[in-house]
Image (cartoon, rainbow, N blue to C red; front, side):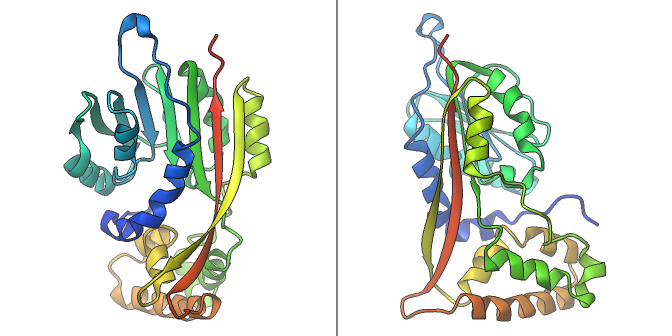
Amino acid sequence: MNSAPIWDPHQYLRHSGHRTRPFRDLLARVPDPAAPAADGRPPRIADLGCGAGNVTALLAERWPTAEITGFDHSPEMLALAEKNHAGPTPGGGRLGFRAADATDWTPDGPYDLIVSNAALQWVPGHAGSFARWIAALTPGGTFAFQVPGNHDAPSHTLLGSLCGRPEWRERLGDRGRDSAHVLAPADYLELLTGLDCAADAWETTYYQLLTGEDPVLDWLKGTTLRPVLTELGDDEAAVGAFLGQYRELLREAYPPGPRGTVFPFRRIFAVATKPAR
């Protein structure tokens, strides 16, 4: 089986408006980096799991003088991020991208801000890296992230049931049936405060109105379905059969309304700030 999903950045960006909103809400709760004035350096920011770079660019809008690096393990995502967003920023900062896997990423120096948007859910045991990442923050620096919290939603439970059917079980194994790698907000809060940070954690359910034909399926093709689609590869018959079965299940679970299809999406947020001294 393929070890990592192959990402399609163009499919992912088809719903960029909805996908960007939680990151904007996260940034609204992030304090400005407090780079030491004595050395005159700009703030240094890392975006862990930057994807196509569209949310990394929002960091440059908020902190235009910052040196910002987006990290991701997908060559497809990094190529598009580099093409569309890399280079100097209008405020005198710089936006760059590098290959890295959040599973074992170790900061290469001090950062004033480390953020991650909808990426850590793919990393089993990611909370075990919090101490290492927070240790790399400058005094007063911040670690902030948001992850999906909808693994009990029909979109995911139906996918797991479908992958477990006899005609797919041997072909797909655990693809589409992986357990959630996300903790409850209270657990994140306990972990982060235990690392001597001032922390906040919360959750929000967005009731997204999706439009078009089979919009929930189209949304999931950009994220949740990537491991399954990667495993089925170029087998067009298998891809068509699987998507056809999943489409029918989703149509029943998420019926369209007169102005679109309502797709509830729960997100979990956390912001942790290291003591200034």
